[in-house]
Amino acid sequence: MASVLVVMGDEIARYGFPAGHPFGVDRHAAFARQFEARSLGARVAIAPPRLADCAELLLFHTAGYVNFVHERSSTGQGSLDGGDTPAFRGVYEASAAVVGATLVALRAIMDGAARRAFVPIAGLHHAARDRAAGFCVFNDIGVAIEVLRQEHGLARIAYIDIDAHHGDGVYYAFEDDPAVIFADVHEDGSTLYPGTGGASEIGKGAAAGTKLNVPLPAGADDLAFAGIWPGVLAFVEAARPEFIILQCGADSVAGDPITHLGFSPMVHGRVALDLCQLADRLGHGRVLALGGGGYNRDNLAAAWNNVVEALAA
Image 1 (cartoon, rainbow, N blue to C red):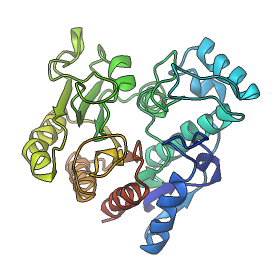
Image 2 (image 1 turned 135 degrees about the horizontal axis):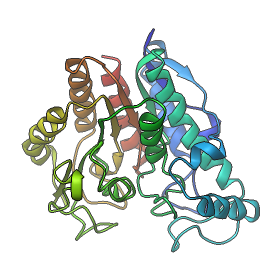
Image 3 (image 1 turned 45 degrees about the vertical axis):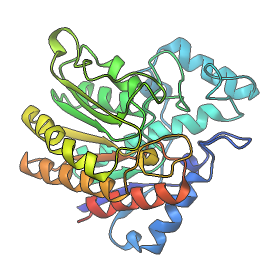
C-alpha cells in the first residue's frame, strides 16, 4: 500500500480564471515545479484526476445550480456569482475535475490503496449547495463529506481549515449536522471576505459545540498560531473523528496579495504532521489534504509541498 497519494494533472490545472484573476491556471504548475525540485515523486504515488459525474455533484449541490453551471460553461459568458467567479468555456468540466480529483483521493484512502492523500487544486470551500462564491464553483469538500457519510457510513468526519478565508460554504452546509466536526482558523471577518466565522458560531441544534471558529487579527504570525493550535487540535481529537479532511489554503502565509495573515509555510507542515499523528492515534490514519486558496505562487508551492512532506513523513 502506498503511504501517500498525490492527485495531480492537467484536468485540475485547467481550473482557474482568465484576465489576471488571482486564481489563475498557473497555480498547479507552481506546485508541480517545487514538487519535482524536492523529488517528492519518489516518495509518493501519483494518480490523475477524473471528472465527477452529475450524480456525484448532486450529493451536495442542487440540480438547478448544476444545470446553471453547465449552461454558463457552454457560452463562457457572465459570472457564476456576484462577480468574483467568472464563467469561462469549460468551467463545468474543470470544476467537475476538481471534485473528481478529491474523490479519487478519498476512495484511495477508503479502499486502503493509500493512507493519506493530497490534491493541490481542490478545497473549494466557499461554494454553497445552490451557488458559486469566492472563486469556488463546486464544493468538492461538501461532496466528499456526503460520500463518506452516504457510501461509507462514517458518523464522525473532521474538517480542519487553515485558509485565510473562513470556510463558509462548508460551515453553513453542515452547521446543524453533528456528524461534521468543524475547526477553522482564519483571518477575522471584519477585515476579509466572506465576513463570517465569528467565535460565537459553534453550530446549531444538535450540532451545537461541534464547530470551532478561530478568527485571528490581520498580521497574526506563527507565534499567534502556536498559541491557538493546541486547543484546536485538542478539540478535534476529543471528537474522535473517523476521517480527517484538511483544507490547507496558502493564502494565510505572509505576502499573499489579497489577505493579511503572517504565517510562514512551516505552519502548514506542522498542521499536516500533527493531524497525521492524530489520525494514527485514533487508529485509522486517514488524512485527506486539499490545497485551497493561495495567490502568491512561491507561498503556495512552499506550503503545499511542506504538507506533502508531512503526509509522507
